[in-house]
Amino acid sequence: MNRFIVLMVVALASGGAILPSVQPVASSARDVRLIGRWDITVTTPTGSAPSWLEIDSSGREALVGRIVGIVGSARPITEIITEGDSLRFAVPRQWENGDGDLRVVGRLQGDRLVGHMTFPDNTTLNWQGVRAPRLARAHSPVWGAPIRLLNQNDLNGWLPMGSPNQWLVRNGVLSSPRSGVNLRTSRTFDDFKLHIEFRYPKESNSGVYLRGRYEVQIEDDYGREPDSHRFSGVYGFIAPSEITALPAGQWQMYDITLVGRMLTVVANGKRVICDQEIPGITGGAIDSNEGAPGPLYLQGDHGPVEYRNIVLTPAR
Picture 1 (cartoon, one colour):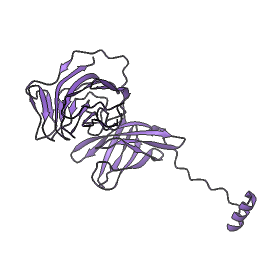
Picture 2: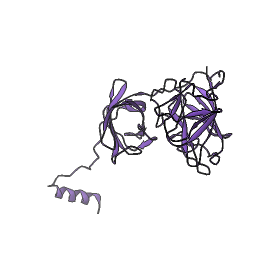
Picture 3: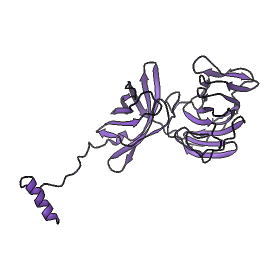
């Protein structure tokens, strides 16, 4: 059947008028000011909690992205629906309570994004976001004197992040014998090099948070394939080139360099992440204020772990 006959059939069916071809209805033009990375603070009944959002362009009209919620790792956003300077999207739940999606609504307000999140359990909380800083250094760092962060037999210089505290130090070994609270340094740091040694029993899990915001995963992953959620990965963002974990029960080590957002990780003597950008905060971060110095913090709520020889060399 040729095109003329098709048009005649459509015309007769519509009372004689030749109908134009049907085109999809275009949504409101996207506001390019939405595109970028946003450091988000969520207001909760007990205080504030950090989150992070990345909005990116896909083709001529579509927006996609990633979100780190209050808990968990980065989740892809397959479609961000916009109406002028407003946006909305939903992603499947990850570690939140409830059975629904995580639903996010926001709009530009000056140089900020403001909105609310509805969690899988239908709790709704307000949030606001600021543009994430680039954290680019004008010059290469000059390294200062190394700082030994761990005393021989006490927790001086460290602060438990809750109670009761299960962390203790004996003969230069910092240990968390059971799941409990996390632990952070009282001092804060900008750019640095870090040497840290650790040991865990079989199937245990911990992590070291750089500036309190970016978790390098510590987990019993001996013999497994590389993944951003596994040993030496930046949780949910950067996978190591290989898993160099030793069997559980042995002392292991990381040598980490963090300059701005650029990260290098040497795990048990092998470079597994080489000058890679950390896009944003990981789940469990102390806050989303990426432009500020932050502490070193150790995860103690996932399983037993021991640390020793924690030496940090700050940039000047």
